[in-house]
Image (tube, rainbow, N blue to C red; front, side, top):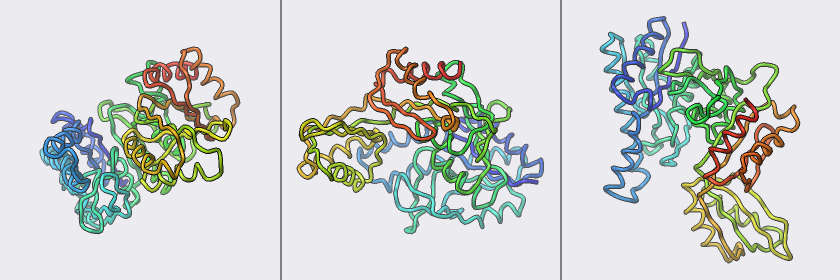
Length: 401
């Protein structure tokens, strides 16, 4: 039969009833004769609760100790799932990140996977055991526990699938697949039967929370067959793959990202090297920049605006303030009351007027655009946070209804 990696998110293992439901899904695949490896997230809001517990003790704990704390959520999940499968009479073993030798770098809180030794997992599979793996965590060269960042269990699942050369990697969540928009917020959102890696990667990077963007990137690089499906409704999900149907729709989905901030530097000298000095400072501070807008020079000055993750806003502001004289700006303006709304679709490459339709929908909805960014398969706009949901609904209606 097949070797299947199944990943269950926090909502799918949030309580005893849901763990038992997931256990039946796992047991079913196993009894069909498949080898089954399962990757789990922490239950429900466990990670957020652990973060709050840490703040009660120390408002500014070290990232290393936070990783030690946060990794315990997944350890609870795998133990409970193993117990549920034992109750069903299934042979099972639970393993942590260090037990499967999930090697990462030392970027605590957002570690990158370097390698996965599949030996321990293969040994357990040879014993015909179901292997339950703690997601979101690994171990660095110092034998310290590391975590992979929000959504990191998706990346764990794909990394394990790569190491084992799995036939399929299934991502179980609380929705039935990948939709044209968040079905919990937009009426008329449609489930997609399939989507390309590139489209899924853009949607994940632009705020769609179905899959972690790094997991999609890894799946594309190593050709892992992905399927996103529900742990609550037994229906086929959405296949994520390299090539889909010959005829592409203009766009595949609409995404919103509220986890951003806009920074504007005013009164910059209109001369070569200014942009380099700004973004070198941010690069040295390990801050990623997304949308960038530079104004036409007025006299001998110009302005540059850009967006960063909301969590990086303070660090970016401090770094820029520290180098104000070297950069040469007169004023800095910062706000996190913004959101990025995007459309994504491989069909854009062969269709004209897509951006115009998007902008027309925003005009009709009386939503003002602050910044615009484009690529071959996406168009993103920055809008006021209060307008974001209205913008998403208006754009989705224009393209899909």
